[in-house]
Length: 128
Image (cartoon, rainbow, N blue to C red; front, side, top):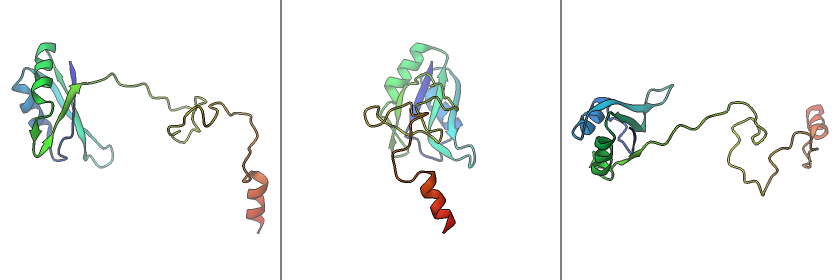
């Protein structure tokens, strides 16, 4: 079973994480999430345990437990969401954000712009 562990100190190591969980059963892997560029910890990790029963026991024992002055968040990891890197019609192509469907239509491919900063307005600014 794959387990999510949150609220870790940034200097926490994979070995320390594995040691803590190995007290509750056999650990297949323990890895702290790190920033791709800086390799700094993101403050959360994933642990895989071979037995579901041992994993559930570890979740029960460690969730809320204070380690290095922080209460851990420990629960079963959710499946990873599929990420789309193309424009699917509901985002602008620049990260999208969280837009509610009531404030703005999601498919605006061929609609004219209603704001006053259209191409003609931009061209006037450039000519000045």
